[in-house]
Length: 208
Length: 208
Length: 208
Image (cartoon, rainbow over the protein chains, first blue to last red):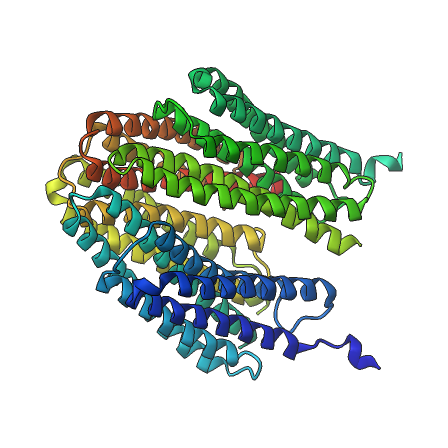
């Protein structure tokens, strides 16, 4: 009977895992699209569905948060964690949406690299989140170091991509504007992954 | 005597209503400007005054919040609500300011549509906020659904506007840069309206 | 013995002061770079080091915050204050990084003016933060008025700079894109200074 009132930890954790897997899935679809821009409309539809799925999961966590008295980790950390994870999929969707709207034809290799970095990063996010439930905090810390390393790599690729964009298309400012916006959304997605790592690290710090 | 120490609910609620009406007013002025860009400097002045009025109202709420022991809704919700409402008027002002600085001559029909959507959205915000005081929560939920619907419409118009901008002015990148920035500010204003709806919905969830 | 458990106020305050001095230093380096763009790579390196130093200080504050039971000012205010101060140095670094990546040659006088305003603003931030420890709240309020005044000046310079950029380089859209981004980062840095002032003002309001 009392069980009803006890914190149902597994619920939140499994919802986090679903959200992380959803982001990882959308990053993989993004790579497929960037590698072959002729299929971008097909992939865009799938990524849009992942974005909608992400919104649904976020709302579900919020609703549960409002109805749960005792939470397994700080209420505000649950809130931030799920919002920042959702930011990643939102930004992946935003970059895909622009690429389609702008009718971009072929993606430069740097764009593909940047997206592959997002796949790797979101894999570590999924792994780290999978460790929350069993309080494997030292693993989380290791994964967060990897996420930060990948964020640095992503930042390096983004900056190289910008330089090449301006160098290779100095006489096509419209194309520069279009790809610059796609790159910026991808870079923001990478930054949001780092935010997720920061929240995970602060959860570990509070519980260790 | 004791009354002094009791929560003065009406104060916060009437200040929210003032702030919402102020945003709605600035959205209406924005439509007038977009419909006739030759009067943009005159309208810009009026919208700037609304922006200043918004700042004043926000500061007043903050000051009161710091001096009030018991608040009618959660302290952090009052803070977020008034800040997000102020964001809307700030972003309306930002788009107007850019249009004037950039000496934009005529607004495309999509720009006018986007601004009209903002008028409708801010009307629903005003209505929803008017229901807070009397705890008419089911009305608030209905209005929030309308705000979300209008945000989706605004997003659709914004994306169409971007496509047309790049298609119609492919040989005038400077004009593309200018209108893209105006559109982005308007789109951000629409997003902030959705943030307001989200806060209202979470207030309802906590009190229902 | 008990002293161990008492709030160690000076620690936080001296860390704030270090962070503020670090921002002020990076603003000064930025002016030197803008005045002579031929030395931009040298200065960029120094500003990058300041940015790293800022990150380290922020992490140190966070770590201490998680281990401290009683804090001299509200936990969330310490968090916001140190994050917003770090935003300023991050944005100074972002504008420098873009200027180098984009191989910008000479800075317009407006760019130099905007950076000089940042030096003045961060001096007042340093002064205001120096008054926290001894609770000299009326001084903090005066400095915050100065910061707001300088933010208005920075905003005016930024808008003039934008107008001149579009007027003087109407036939070089690529250059417009590049400088527009540098200016926007500088403008965001000025805005973050205002955020710092707002947090300081709210700390004063709570303790006065």
